[in-house]
Structure formats: C-alpha cells, structure tokens
Image (cartoon, rainbow, N blue to C red):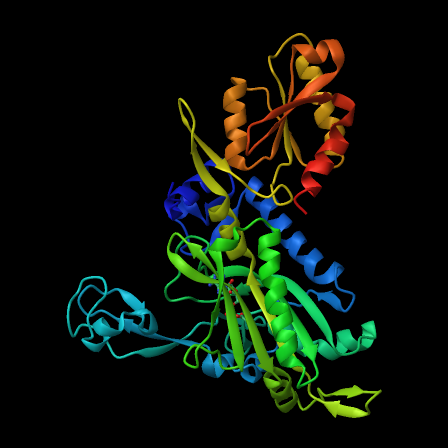
Length: 441
Ligand code: GAP
C-alpha cells in the first residue's frame, strides 16, 4: 500500500484532524487549522517532546518568549541581511520558483521546470522570508517589526535571565515551543512547508571545545526520540549539510530526514551554531553576553548546540508513518497505527445494541474513564462501522458492552492494530488501559 499526501489530506479533513485555513473564503494558502482530533494529537506531540527535553533533563528548563521582538534582534541574528531565498519567475507561464530548487540542467538553460519554455526565467531576486508588520497606532511613525521566523532568538536574548534566575551552570539547555512565520516562496505538500508553523527548539549552552561531543550526543538523542514516538526506524536517516547548504550561523549541521511520499526530506535540524548568536547579540546590544566559570575562573562566550524540530512537520510525519490500508476478506480497512501515547482518543466505548441497559453501562464506563483519559462514547450504527471509524481516527482501544456484561460485569477490549478482543472485568479497565498505553513508552 503506497501512502500519498492526498490520502493523508483527505483523512485529516474527514476525521477532523486538519482543515485548510479560511476554507469558506476560498482558503488562505499554506495555512492550516487543527480540528478536534488534530489539536489533541498536536498537544500530545508537544507534551511528549517537552517531557523528553525538559522534565527528563535536570539541566534543561523551559521558556515561552513573545513572538514579537525588538527589530534589532533580527539584524543581529543575520535574518534581515541573510534570510533570503533567490526568486525567479517564468516569463512564459508566470509561475514563481526558488532558484535553488530548480534542476541544474534546466537552470543552465534558464528553462521553466513547469511549462518547459527555454530562456524564460528572470534573473534571481533576493526575497526576504520574514513577515513585516508595524507596532504602534500610526503606520508611518510606528516602528517596523517582524513576526519571528524562528523561536531560537527568544532563547538567546534571554539566556542570562534564565541562567541567573535558575542558578544554572554550563552545560545547560533552554527549550521552547512556539509559533514561527516564514513567507515561503514555495510552500506546499500540506503541513510540510507552511507559512505559519510551530517549532520545538532546544538550545544547549556549552564550553567551546566541548561542542563536538555534545553535538554527537544530541544527534543520537533526537533520533532516538522519533523512534520512541513510534516512527519506523527504516524511514529515518541523517543527512549532513555540505558547505553550500550550511546556514549562515552554523559550523556543522545534520538533518534528521524522513522518507515522505515526496521523498527524503528534512524533519529536524541539529546545528552547531558556535558563539555566532551570542557574539552578534553582544555586538548589537552592547551588553556583555559572556559566561564566567567560577571554578576555572575563565570567562567565555558559550557555544550553542541547537535541536530544531517542526511540530507540524512531526505531526505530518506521525500521520504518514501511521497510515495503513489493510486488505481484509471483504473490505479494505484504513487504520492509523498511532503510538497509543500520541493517539488523540485513547479509548472508545460502545454498547453493542441500544437496549437492555447496555447504553447506561457504557455511559457509566465512559464517565469513569474520562477522569483519566480522553474517551469517546458512540452508540450510532453497526458496531463494525463504529470500529472502523475509530481505526481511522487512530484510537488504540475499543471497549464494548454486550449481553455477557449484563450477567458477569465483563466487557471486551479490542486492540486497534491486531483487532484482537479480550474479555475482562469492567472494574479493571482503567488500570488495563494504563498498562497498555505505558507499554508504548
Ligand atoms: N532555529 C533554526 C531553524 O529554524 P530550520 O532548519 O530553518 O532551522 C527547523 O527549521 C525546523 O523547523 C525544520 O526542520 C522544520 O521541521 C521546521 N520548519 C522550518 N520551516 C518550516 C515551514 N515553512 N513549515 C513547516 N515547518 C518548518
């Protein structure tokens, strides 16, 4: 079964994971809204990342910086000067492209990759990807500011505040999850490249000279995290940036790539940013950004190892990786084999039929389980159809109240992937669910 982006888009809309932004007005390109299941899945992705990065590391703390920052931040960071993509237009079909994404042979002939016209591409223009806006009531006199294109800078400008207030000593890390905005020239492929997205970034401050070892450590840790959320190992790989690919701030960079339906692409970047950012902020702000090591009595600018993941891109990866179509005897079953800890709904509860007191018992089970898990009660339609709906939503467990329940207080619990059903006592459900969800942790 080949998963396509179209299948994912269609399932996401059908089941309420993701909708196109402003759909009734003909949509806003490259922006998406998360529906009831999508928002839960996204919360679970973020929660799992936060737990792995902040709660499980004594020397990593969290931050939530403002999206709007002083415009000088983006001068210091190099984004005003260097955050450009080379833009070319086809004079024939009027389409627009990033020059660096055009096949080199076609580019040499200035040939349009879509309509094929030769000598049709304009000279490249440098296009800054930052969204601009104004702060203050009168546009002409107000200062021009930017919507942040990465969350990282909020961490760098706060590093001393965080370090001093939390009494941290190098090495330590600061983690942040938040929105970023890029006026991408070629957005597309659903959530893969959008203009508004969320990043999950961690900046680790180290002594120069210790950066290489720490880089290798985080490279391995980040790869292990993707496997821990159920992504298939064979679909993940590292890609080292060549000299021509390195961002202006990086000495060394590796991407974690995933094999999407559109090919191997970046999922997360791990960068050795050296002291580039802190030295630039020191220069532009005139504030001392050095660290004083009170044991060795040395003063230095820390190096930064960055792990930068896209939340929406992770969510897309999780969906693509989990999507399956299974051929059964009489039908094809679409199933999202989501890791139970990420699944938006942990269990669905059904009365087999809507009589003999079964709905009342099923509702009581739902109410009890709701205190701990997101559960969903459903009594509409044939039970087989209810199972299928939950399979598509990625719900790992379905609990059914049937006629035997009326006699001995047992229910069936059906596992999504194997469709295997076990019978168990109703009053042990909460513990059983915990066991089965934790098994994936
Ligand atoms: N602070 C470093 C930084 O922002 P990046 O490689 O430009 O590095 C990091 O971005 C991650 O953010 C990417 O690996 C990707 O997951 C996500 N990302 C970047 N641009 C994106 C976009 N337009 N849409 C969705 N996710 C994006």
